[in-house]
Length: 546
Image (cartoon, rainbow, N blue to C red):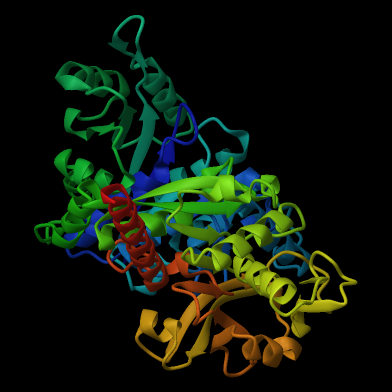
C-alpha cells in the first residue's frame, strides 16, 4: 500500500504549495521511489474548464482529457509523469458524486451530511490512486489556506485518515509565511504560530513546517518555531525565495525535507538522489550564452498564470538552446495597423497564444501578418494557428471577410469552422475536443524536421478547426497542411515553406514540455529566433563597419 503526504498551506495563498509538493515529489522520485501527486481544490466548480483565466490561471489538460488545475502542470514538469482525471478533485466533483448517489438511493434513506458522507467521498478519492499499487508515495496538495470555510471538509478528511491509517503511513507538511519586517529588521514567526494553531484546532497537527521567507531563518528562529509549534527542530524547513522555481528541489534537498519525510514514514530503503540531468538543466538556465526576445501576443497578459505552461516551455527550450528567453508581453487588443511595427520592433520571434472569444482577435491577425511579411519566426498555438489561417485567407487568397464562425457566425468565408461533433453540444463544461490525439506528419516538412518522425500524439482543447473545404486553395497558394489526424482529416499543423520559420498547430505542445524533455516545437522555435537574432546582429555589425 502507498504512503501519503499531505501538503497544506496557511497565512496566505500563493505561497507555492504546488512547487513545494512537486519539489518534494522530485526528490523522493530521485531516490528511487514511485511517486505521484494530486490536487484537491475547494471551489465548487466541477473543474476549471469553464473558469476565466483571470479567475484561476490556465486550465491544464491531461493525456486522458481532464481539464485540471495549473498545479498539475508543475507536477508533470518536475516529475516527467502523466497525471490524469484522478489527480485533480474539486469540491464540486465531490458533491456531484454524493448527490448522484443520494438520488440513486445508495444511502438507504439516511440523512446525507458533510460528516460522514462528504468526508468519506474525499477520503475515497484521496486513496484512489494509492490503492492501484503503482506508487510508493502519493503526495496530496490541499488548495486554499487553513481557516477557509470551504477547506474544512478536506482538513477533516485528513484528520480521519491520520486516525484510520497506520501512524507511519501519513505525514502532513504545512507551508507558512515568515515575513521580514524591514522597519524592525526582523523575521516574525507569529503568523506561522497562528497558522499551526488553527490547523491543530481542527485535529490535524503538522509533522513538518516549511517556512517561506525572504531572509535566512537561522538556528534561533527555527528553534523558536519548533518550540511554539510543537515539532522537532529538524522539521522546520527554510524555503528561501529562489531565482527560479527549478532551484527549489535543490534547496529542499539541502534542508533535508525529503529525508525527514521518509524518516516519518519509516522508509529505510532508498537511494542517493540522482539529479544530474536536473543540475545540468539548471546550469544552462542560469548561465546562458546569448539572449533572444520573444513577443507573446495574447489577451490575458495581465495574469502570467494564464499562460503558465507556455512560459515554462520557453524556459525549458531556452536552456536547451543555451539562451535566455526574454518575453515581451503584447496585449493583442491594443495592436493596430498604425502601431504594429512599433509594438513588435526588436523581437526575434513571435508567438500568438491560445484563447477564446472575439476580444483582441484583429490585433492577433495584424501581428501574424507582420511576422509573415517580415520573415520573423512565427509560432501559433490553437487560436494562434487559426489566426494565421484567417490572415493568410484574407491577405494572400483575397478572401477579405475570411473569419472563424466562433467570432462571426455569418462570415461568407468560414475558413475556421466548428467541428461537426461539437455542433449539437449545449453543455460547456468538459465537452471540447480534449486530451491526446494522434497526428500524422508529412515527410520533407518543417514539422517532420522538428519531430523527426511521421506519427506523434499531442493534447488538444478546442471546438473549432480548419475548414477543409478551403484546404486545396490554401495549399495552392503556399500554405501546407503538414500534419493531420488520419481518422478525421482534422488539420493539426500548418506551415509556410517559403518562410524561414512559420508554423501553427491546433494542439497545445506546451502541455507536454518538461525539464528533462522540452517540447520539440518550442526548442526549434527558440533555435530559429536565435538564428534570426544572430543574422540581425551580424547585419548591424557590417553596417557599422561600412
